[in-house]
Length: 128
Image (cartoon, rainbow, N blue to C red; front, side, top):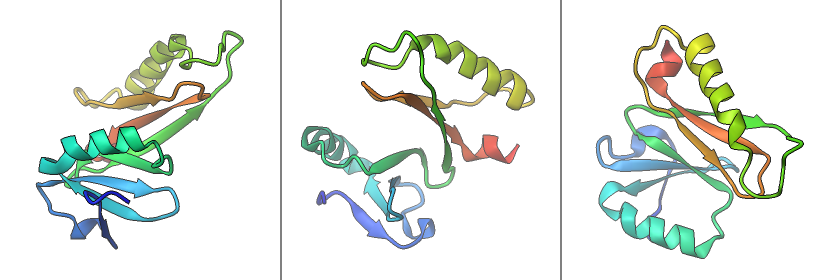
């Protein structure tokens, strides 16, 4: 693992204002100091062997929930998932599920050749 990753047992062990959290899909929890993030991101992307780790882009004070949407499309070309589904996701999340929350940011992530999206929703939105 990277020298920038610090393994912790619980989220509460991470520095409150100076950490980005990462979760290993096998159950491990890690953090990266904000000041180290640029170097870590470069290392992480170039190594390409951290596929089992997903990053919580919220701060340690506001964790995020990942909503995983898997789908197939007749227009699937093996590249990025069809962007035609993004307006549907936005209208469903914003208008039907979270209409009473006025302003929030969520992140939609897609992998080339993948068959779905990961949507990160901040904890304060989940609480509503």
